[in-house]
Length: 293
Image (cartoon, rainbow, N blue to C red; front, side, top):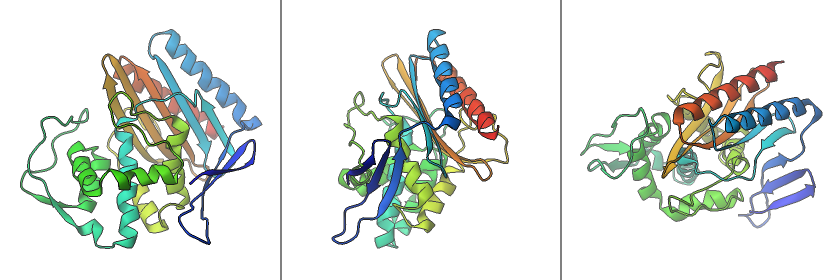
């Protein structure tokens, strides 16, 4: 799939798998509206301030109102290792294949033993029991809600690299290199996964709704959701990774702010996860307050 350029501020993305149809996936607007200019300036100031104080090495932000042609991109071309946020395209690949194969979600896979070389997400505990079998649906739930890496490993083995890569091709996202120091993406490219889920344009409505429901149950709450009002639904996923002394902490979310939902994708690079998560939390509060004002 390739974008079709309508005019310099808007890109239109379509699927080209069929002979006579070309389904619309999403549009991206590259201009900052007058209404979004103040928040763009505030976010830039926050990034620069945290870098100057040593809390971050760098940070990128993509903010978009879901029902309007309004978006903000701060350092949008800089790339980061998104870590476990990549579990979203794995989930979407399973759901895409299940449309043609309704039995897939109930397919059982045996978990043989714990992989000592596979990292456990911070704060997570071993979930899978050696010798027990789990359905694909159960593995997706553990992978997303608990960010369980062993569930992800079983699903990755089931799907294979080529099937997972197809969603990147379909959304016109560069397929990341599979080495730890080159597995990088930018915030705007990653936002496409959430955009097509919200619009139900890549999966059908049923599967898109289920995917976002899983993301709304994610247990991690140190970033975007830390101090947001509890009654606000947030579909989100975080990711951590490191390369030597450099630590990556990222989070992507759709915040269902009453009738004015918005998406925020933030990726950070630094040396202290606590300072990075604090930055993401403060950023989320600023965005929420400004969206409501």
